[in-house]
Image (cartoon, rainbow, N blue to C red; front, side):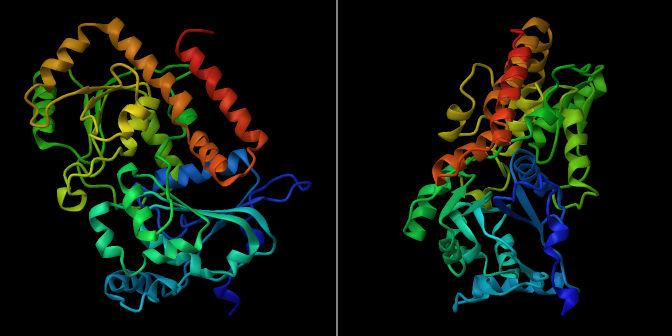
Length: 388
């Protein structure tokens, strides 16, 4: 059994010997490194940098791939509601101390069974939270056989504003909204803004009408249009930090950045539920001028209340070229919009603000590292606004 258990000492983040880690943070980064998971891992990294965190990285046993895939398929048919409590082939972990906070950040529901590898974790934490990034209201009926597992946590947070009420009702308890975010220091063009050599950057899903119009523009004019040529969301990255750095380097060298609600062209999954995808936070943080669709959600005006946060264009692409042309003729306006986006992201959308909100709700005192990071973000925002 020695090879089926994790030596927890090898998972401990380096920190002062005088202070024990007060937060236990499991992570699936060793099990899967899909492109769409990298933002979640970034959120975990930021918390690890600003607090005393023990990062517990799950490790796979030889039969993990088969067991986890089979479990995922069977969950929807499991009328016993017990399959969610089985370990899908992750090496067992034994916690060796107690923690103030046990924080589980899940990209999707299939991350939840990994917790079964951590033995008796509920007795080692004062407060436990689950932050679930993606859960659509329409799919709740499919989650009937496993959603009860969320009740093992003291607090449940959801990134999708429109799902909070429905999930709260399903669980019979209050859930909380905690939106996505970004490592604003990584994405910010400040303090030394690079030259924006990319005219427009489009990452991930796209509207074909807009894409066709931009392709035509790039063929007819000196317009550098960067876009994906294959679906990359489910592609494994070599290293999630390098992927985020590469993405950030492109974004902060782009004049325009395409944005749209999450899964905007997958109506069979969303059924009309508009939610803010990560692109809004990343584009703003990079100081790019965001063009595309404004999410039809109460969350958007709350998170992006400033003027020209997103320049709307029609999904069929009929007006995108004329709108870009008009903006490009006014470089002073573009400069103001760029600086405002970057500054507002520094003040609102860094991951530290999400962790701060969580800590306030669950009653955990902020760390000195958290306070220091917010101070540095504020100073950089003032620089972006030309106030220092």
